[in-house]
Length: 462
Image 1 (cartoon, rainbow, N blue to C red):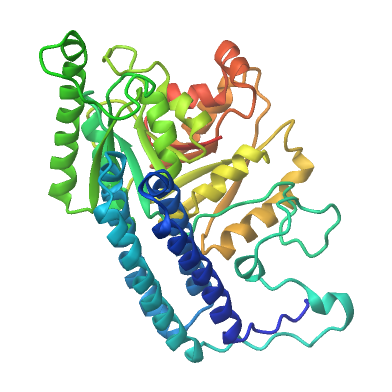
Image 2: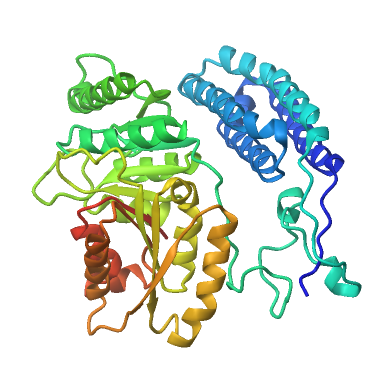
């Protein structure tokens, strides 16, 4: 018999949200009391904490099925995007030592959090009753975990205990699922591929109501200009670096023109760093990074060989790789998605990271690749878990089982691209570099094949 899970009473939701807001308000108060030097150092971390809190609140509000909040969640998500856009917008000013607006913004956040509390608490009494469950059970089975338990408390440990019969999934690793895209970062440069890349990022930002950041790199290590780029005109250093700064500003102007034309909230950042390290560092404050495939025929001053490889390995965020070329992806390129699954940690991370995109897709096909990491006998067992996981996140998917034991690993990547073409998929989602990166670079592999040969956008996660 299925254990009966009694509905969580509305005060539990309210208490969880109030506790989270109380912690954040205390953090804001500490930041506001910091001297200027400490405030400037802590501001970027504070932005990340505010973003994490707002996501958590949206998740609880969305999951608890409140009548009044169902109409409010989308509106509040837009309000949250505006708050985060403002915080990101003043970040360059903070880096340049201008803290006035940032301090006013931090002070105003307390009032914003109070408004969120009022809107949520007023709707809690209107909570939709849970459907009646099956007959109650006694003993340990009656104390099965509530599906919202992980939202209302911090997990004691990210590890799954062996033999835990109450675990909803049998994957030997935790799955951290972003509920929505709120912040997208796109690489801006003077490459001929940049317009298609920026247009793809704009399409996603507009569809998800996300804030878009365009980042252009100076092309010189941040160790050279730790305090920003300020060169005295006429000096030898200015003659060397001014052309690089001018190119970066031109790239940002092109980004501004595209983003403004589509009416998405955005900001432009000139980063004093090389393209690879700069994007990897800045992407840690975004939900998604958008770059282009490498083009061996193109050589730019800030071009880094195999840039997608580097940021995938070092950003800790999903990376959307747009095919090289000047063809702009279709507006619905993420409507039909192929998700590659081989049972690995990387595949699980890719699946979890892609949930916000999969929710909006019209067709999701999971290609289960049986092989050393996933024996054929395991496919059926993981198939049920996989569909259950996606279903709980309101993603409808179908599963195709394919043999992944060809003579060469690169053939796996080509097989995925061929299958995507057969299904008419507009985007591929897969884990990247399950083998060591050195092995794949030397001997080839599915990750390298997809990065080099994909003709559709690919969402890759390490």
